[in-house]
Length: 242
Ligand SMILES: Nc1ncnc2c1ncn2[C@@H]1O[C@H](COP(=O)(O)OP(=O)(O)OP(=O)(O)O)[C@@H](O)[C@H]1O
Ligand SMILES: [Mg+2]
Image (cartoon, rainbow, N blue to C red):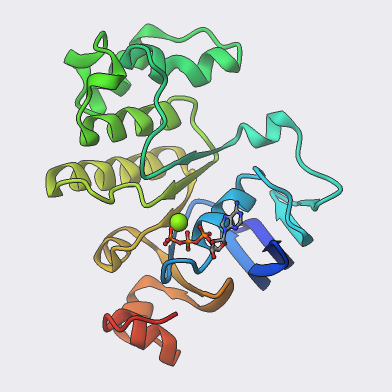
């Protein structure tokens, strides 16, 4: 598998404080890559850098072979291959249907009604297409956010704690959809999760991020069964590490 991202000497800071410091990291095309780590480790910041929402202060992020850096950020077309779903979905104050087709509209693509109907069906929202998004439950809103992210076949789907605060049924639906779409479209998925069981269920490889640095990257099975690093063992055993 080739690398969709290659990070080389990437550093990012806020107010003079280093929050990301990654010497080298590759994320492979088509994999589900998990990022775990304590609060404040820099997980959300790393996702923002990978979505090119902020330029890294230092270093290079190669995306599909092209090097991007502070002075050379990707075009809108490239950025639109990548999308993020946050823990709290920011839905537009309109109907579920309009939310789901929004990414197509901004890409000047005419929504195919059959494709949209199939998407709503797959996320279990067929009956709610004309309901206002603001009236949805947390789980329904997150499924709208996922449908809105998947409707344009992103190459890279970034998930920042996508199922925090959801009930087990909604968690299962979201995990199943992510796996199914990855199989169908070969998109790359990078998921930040506080739930180590979710990382184990969902991910091909997992990274522990600590103080902005990559402590350990490994195949999910190896990471959870025989973590190499003492910090990984401490994190997995539920010890608070800062
Ligand atoms: N826009 C910002 N301005 C200043 N500091 C920031 C900003 N965003 C993040 N930080 C700081 O950077 C560090 C990393 O934050 P980040 O949100 O990436 O952590 P995280 O690993 O996602 O944590 P959590 O698990 O709590 O979501 C934190 O110390 C945070 O206070
Ligand atoms: Mg975060």
